[in-house]
Image (cartoon, rainbow, N blue to C red; front, side, top):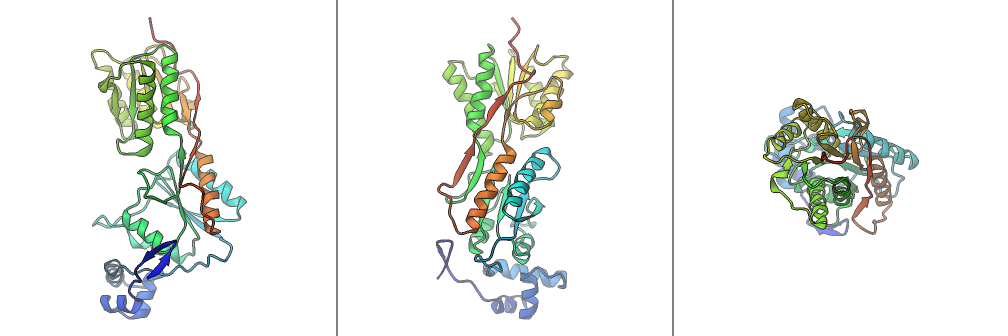
Length: 347
């Protein structure tokens, strides 16, 4: 047995066994493992399949005793201001620690749904000392691969509940949902809807739970038809808002679980000739730059994205130094940013 990160795992096959299984020489198998490009595609495929089939575990090339110099940041997308805020926080903390950052957008999968070995092997080949995952949904195989290779990693706002022992940093989403709903209740609204993200995402379910809790604490009846899911998509948010407006008793206010979806809510209201906040009050979540550009500017819950990313980076540096964080989950506070999109209900 070999101990990795405090966990015992069975020793895997040697590279010679992998080479024999794939019908290639040991040097050729070594090239594939090390991410070399001078291997024919068909040969690379056979070796990669043999690696997966046999459960080959490559020993880390980096030396934990040496000062870390490179970390990987894997983001969901590079096209949003969300990713820009995360990148800013990581870069700032990495600079302070003397680290360089390699940025990747997403983790590719094979057609069979398994994680692609290429990115993971390149991670080892370039000598990265740790990984930051933002909004990433890792498979059990990917978690196991990182554990087997003893690569420290931290999740920034994980999509799903991470396995026990995985370190993550997020925002106080439940409290943010409470604050948004309490703000609308304080203005006199009782018919309050919520346009949420994905049902299964941690952040989305926590925000909806906060919304429900605030209504219950205020003694306001919860209406199932007022809860709509739009998958954090602007177009879906527009359609869900139109559905709310078509109800026999439409809401007078809506808590939207992301600023991006709030754009779709504004669009739906404009289509119906309704004004914000005269006809409907709107509260968003994130406090992205777009929230200030809307007309009227959006009242929203500020999520400290850059601070979350910087905190995750500092935790990763400690883990690369062999120091385990006291807890696995760190939550940073959210707060209401009041602008002009909310007001008292008519009448």
